Length: 391
Image (cartoon, rainbow, N blue to C red; front, side, top):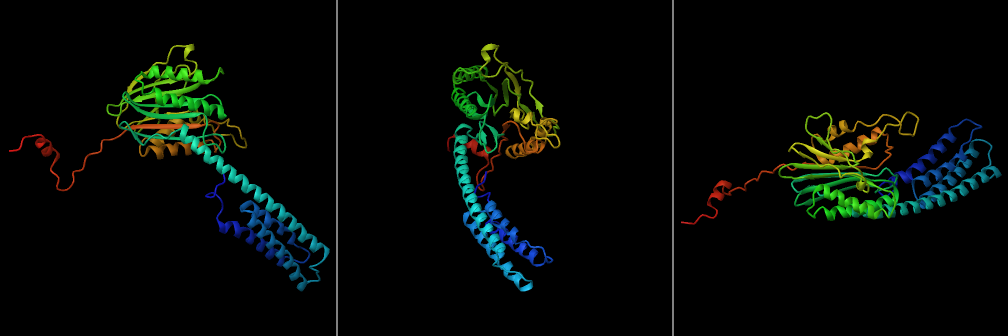
């Protein structure tokens, strides 16, 4: 959406209409007899209205009127021409009237920009409250997440991401609420709040999924809605990994040298809100190696499709998500890798993502060796002397 940072530079807003007017004047002056272009000067205030504000538009309109009349005076020195004729005056009046219209249009556009900026500010605050960004390091793990709404001008949607540190380990949730709009955002807020609270209650990962299922059913207000979710628990020290899926895409593992991300063999259960219809989902037990990255995704990545030529419908081939994840996240920064995944998905879909896209990456934090200060005794000597009686 337009913002002060995204507007054209002042030199462009004022200079482009002036250059257009001077270009029309030059074209008219060097044209052969019988051709006249002063009427096209009406484009000067219209261009100014598209680039700048009411003041700049009015100035551009005044410049167009002066240039038009000046061309008439200059033409009178070369050929028989009356700059005060009815035709010339009518042309000036048309430029003046369209300048007034352009000023009003520019004023209306500026108001809409300010309103959109205020809405964006509120949406950013809501996003921070609902989708609180996880810390870069938590419970012995490195962490990064990203979110992109498929709705134009929107900051938040129906996808949800949360990471908390508990006595059982780091627990993470990535999910997708059925539906769109404010109702999906409301339900996402309920699920995230419940997860952040119940994850500390000492229950197992399966029991936590059951608790979230109860939250969804209570928050649905009798409507048939559900939330797909992937839950993981990682011990940052040992790498012990647990994962389950409630109707959600399975997490991926990426390691250096992988050409494709490896999907965890999680057996998905019913989505949250429908667990009472079947048995609870099975919990997969595994290990997260020190050089591996655990990546949780939503359907927005897996269902990204390339539109066919001259078509706005996403009916082409699907994105090769495992290859893209391995390419961007096998090594390097987690946050930069996730940004690369989002760019890759956007390029593949030619900027037409049909669903919200949320990504979360976790990796075990490498132990940082302690560097002794100059002049300090070696750690071994210090430890051997610590607590020993002095002689």
